[in-house]
Amino acid sequence: MKIAVCVSHVPDTATKVKIGEDGKSIDPNGVTYVINPYDEYAVEEALKTKEKIGDDSEVIIITLGSDISKESIRKALAMGADKGVLLKEDNQRDSFGIAKALAEEIKSQGCELVFCGKQSVDYDNSIIGQLIAELLGYSCVTVVVELTIDVNKLTAEREIEGGKEIVESELPAVITTQKGLNEPRYASLKGIMTAKKKTIEEKPAVDSINLTEVLRMHLPPSKQTGRILGTDKSAVPELVKLLREEAKVL
Amino acid sequence: MANKILAVLEQRDGLLKRSAFETVSVANKLASELNLEAEAVVVGNEISNINDVGNYGISKVAHLKNAELVNYSSSGYRDAIVNYANEVDADYIMLANTSLGKDLAPRLAVKLGAGCLMDCVKLDTSSGDLTATRPVYAGKALVDVKFNSGKRVITIRPNVFKAQPSDNSSVDITVKEVSSPNLKTRVVEFKKSEGKLDVAEADIIVSGGRGMKGPENFYLIEELADSLGAAVGASRAVVDAGWRPHGEQVGQTGKTVSPSLYVACGISGAIQHLAGMSSSKYIVAINKDKDAPIFNIADYGIAGDVFDILPALTEEIKKVKQG
Ligand SMILES: Cc1cc2nc3c(=O)[nH]c(=O)nc-3n(C[C@H](O)[C@H](O)[C@H](O)COP(=O)(O)OP(=O)(O)OC[C@H]3O[C@@H](n4cnc5c(N)ncnc54)[C@H](O)[C@@H]3O)c2cc1C
Ligand SMILES: Nc1ncnc2c1ncn2[C@@H]1O[C@H](COP(=O)(O)O)[C@@H](O)[C@H]1O
Image (cartoon, rainbow over all chains, first blue to last red; front, side, top):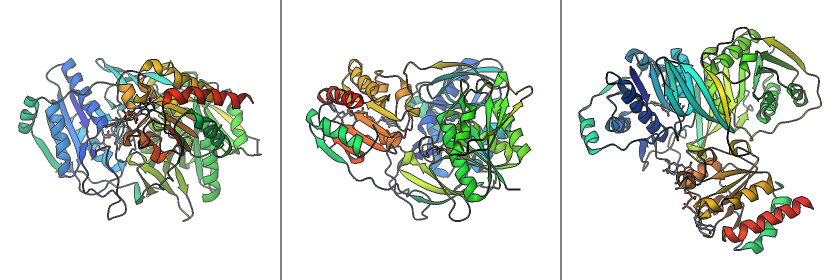
């Protein structure tokens, strides 16, 4: 079976956001980019699935982005993925435009199982996996923390408010991964060396329309630094009074 | 005939959720500003409090009913709602950005040929068209976004928009039987988590971090939470250490919350933690290090020892709640 993993290359979560010159995106100066943290769970689960179902299966990393995104593809290859595809795009696309190009590539590669992260930590949409599934007519289970795949059937546990849902579905399918699903492996030295020899195919991302458009980016209003009411329990009565009378939250 | 906005209401165990009333209220407001007609739709089996939507000023509700849709089925819900949206020719679909809303909204969008904007915290129509604002980079920035598409799917962040009760309480509820639902993907079981209240749904959250020193001390957090009717949250450090279950983690890789009150105890305020809770209305920090970054976003703080302060705080809350 061919397994696709969609990987996005994103600013490190510790990034201090500054607005870029276009007023619509962040200033990339000084920003460290990393593989999207949730996508590491996706890569790991794809590798585990391959190990379970046997050697004729293949794990293909697909990324839409500019040249620098190759770093994240390399990282996934070093973890053990078989090959990478970079769909080149230097411009901003909306989620639909990204999903469209990824879905086309997944189709032409003939992948029946697709892993995405539950969310990219840049735009925080949590949407690409579902869009890909609908565009391809695949089943989809999101925010998965446990997964069992049988021949044509899958059982997944997904995290929701107040508990976990056990979901049954069929292949072909898209799974979006959440922390807790697995422990992503570290790339071994050997993995890193062999990754250098694996191919990253590059091709332009297929055209797509943007159904939504960013007009501007801005910073949240800065909060007034609050009051430190004291250093021990003698400050408690005042705190409770403020919560009641000023904040009115009690 | 005016264009339509369809509010998709979420139910669980046959009860409409609080977010359903928020969704109706926001759909109504948008309808009046953009000259649309607002309707609601809910998928499920028996829904005991369905009449309550009438208290939020919506006049028409379709209940798409089937015993097999008692639990969520992404394929079944999608098909039922898409069919209904096409039948009434809705231009806007609105859902709450809950687990269910996040799962379902993009699927409706693809099937309806609509653009999709997730997790909106502000909807502005002053230009005559809709501009939505949504947080990005875990709330470190916001973007104003517009649609280029005619059909539009929107999810709104729970707890940000308030449900607006209204006098108009006559509501026309139509039950439509869904014949042979598509159950290709379906929930076969729901495992309720041990905790009583989930952070994602709570109006008050008391969170503990590494400053609590060990899992055995979290009773202090639980007692304070009980006195406030709050949910218990945790930092990643304590979840990774195995002191608390993963479902309680607040932050970038945990849950994003925006309660009325967030009490952070022994939490330093790392940027990834702030990412998940900085949009809380009021933040209280208790940390013995007065320079901890959590104080930069707290409204009120006590720069002291949690073991000294928490028991006193619980006592004081109990006292004022009784009096
Ligand atoms: C990709 C990525 C994602 C992450 N996602 C998350 C996330 O979702 N959520 C999250 O929380 N973190 C996340 N983190 C981790 C984050 O960077 C911090 O490591 C973590 O939040 C620290 O937890 P803490 O505040 O409990 O512990 P610490 O940073 O160790 O802080 C403990 C605090 O307790 C105080 N303290 C100690 N003793 C006492 C006492 N007796 N009384 C009062 N105060 C006391 C100390 O002064 C200190 O400020 C993520 C990190 C990365 C790299
Ligand atoms: N540019 C991209 N290239 C490849 N995969 C992506 C890209 N953007 C998002 N994804 C995938 O979609 C998931 C969800 O992203 P999002 O919907 O943007 O939050 C990510 O975790 C990735 O698996």
